[in-house]
Image (tube, rainbow, N blue to C red; front, side):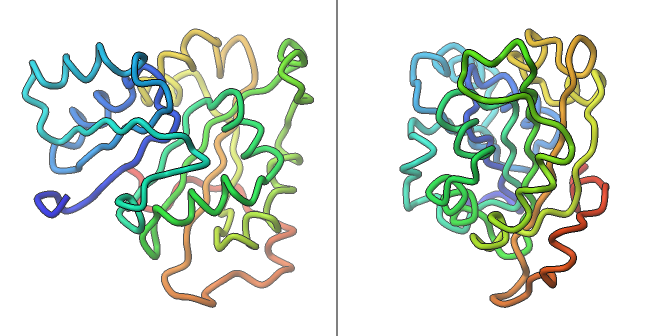
Length: 210
């Protein structure tokens, strides 16, 4: 990690294609894909090795038990269309999941989450979400040291830019609504927004994201 000026962690990376896209787009940045399913990342990790993408790393770990070696290393954390326990953890503001996200982020780091839950997904045990639902996460996020800075609708072009295979298969941004939630970890302890601002999160992009 010391060889790279910036580190991105892609949590719940799935097949890891988003890691390759990010690593190619920003060769100076170390991009770490994290997923509990090692088999899902195997093909892309081999492709990264063949392509000599030395700025990629793949870590097998659950979101609930992130390795301590990742503590405080990330300038940017991305979570693109999570599913299962990671999706439920984010949308229900599970303190274990949120604390893990905050723990791997440097002070001042950014968090970008893309999600889509519609009527078709009720079998997952989650209700459809909209902008209001995501803005309502401001206070529990703040309790774990994360300030939500914006909630915006994500377009098909936004999804394509991530390189997320799952987002593409879902038809997110075109065939179904998708949302981007942006947050940051304060630069210093106690550097948090007033609670009134937590209740009225502005719509904006991710600070510092290219």
